[in-house]
Length: 491
Image 1 (cartoon, rainbow, N blue to C red):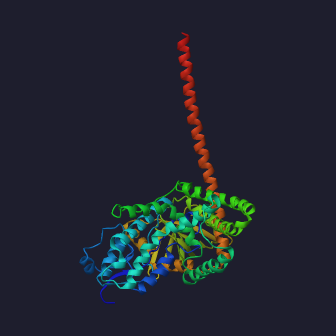
Image 2: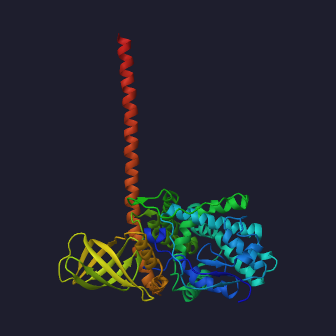
Image 3: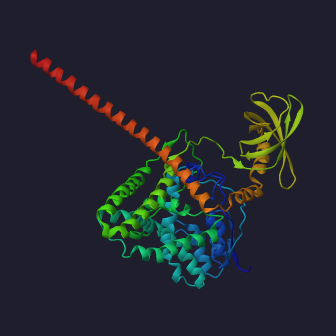
């Protein structure tokens, strides 16, 4: 392609994002960014509107310098730079194959920092650069950029979708004017049609209702951010997303408080709706509709609760799913066993094999492997963990890389094979029946709710206990002071 300024590839993360980690769904369901990189971005590419996503890309320096280098007026400098280059008539291309790997934010708070920056930056582009009127762009490129910018206003619609049924059931506010028959005739087919079309277009990359889970949780935190940008488009400052952090124990993030309050309000609407349905027969149509609406909101909210449970994370390096053969040499026995690779990281490898002899604690071994190019590698390792599974033994091995040359070869083997990442993505891309998805979400909600309630109870108990001892200490101090004063008065 002539005048090509950008080659963008998908972002691939070797660790779960906070939703995947906290909801314990990593590897079982498609990730949040899969629909954008493996579905939507193909559409952008077909309209020559694929834009720079900050990393995993190549830019032509010659064209980049024509627009003064990387832009900096907004805090999403990558997309802003692409707007300037597309406006000059240059072209971009998207290749749907992961070429590099990166890290997702480890905690929910860190993810909010990242998403707030994305939301602020894209709305800055909408206000300050307004792609709809950008000179030099094709009309379809303008629409693509407008879609990418306007998407970040989803917080308003999601929040309204949550509070509208409560507004009627609790306060009697009329939220819409339609009968039950009209809802069944018009609204219900529209909802079913949206689900069917979405599943047809993006079913492998985004399961039904998962967008609702992600966006419902993020909406109440992004709304203040959006308002601040609208009020002052030049005020936001760039904040780097924290990466590579660890967590010694499972905790409940404080960000759960406003969401738990909203869940409580939604849950309170259910008994109120039932009582009103009995008391006001003339309004049963609208009460029934808003009650079903509330039940759906409660279903999504409960399924989302686990996102606030920050799971314990102590690994130095995240392990990636991997497959391949490995020959394990045991120097003690002078014996080689053939095994299967299960996972891999810079610090170690998970291996499954059959052993005709017992493995000693912290057994030294040599792992002999090949990459997809046929190059041979031999890594010294130590078995630090072993689990017996029927006739197989799963061994957790730590690499013992001695010297810089050994470390460089280890890095080359672990991170130099992009086919491993492609295989993992294809493993996650799968269609599931609606009943399967429903069961998956229910199971996820039960586990997340249980953990959320347990941690909330512990947190509440800790606060009450601390408050009790503080109050008791102050009362005791006052009593001693009083006794001292009475003693002096008696003297």
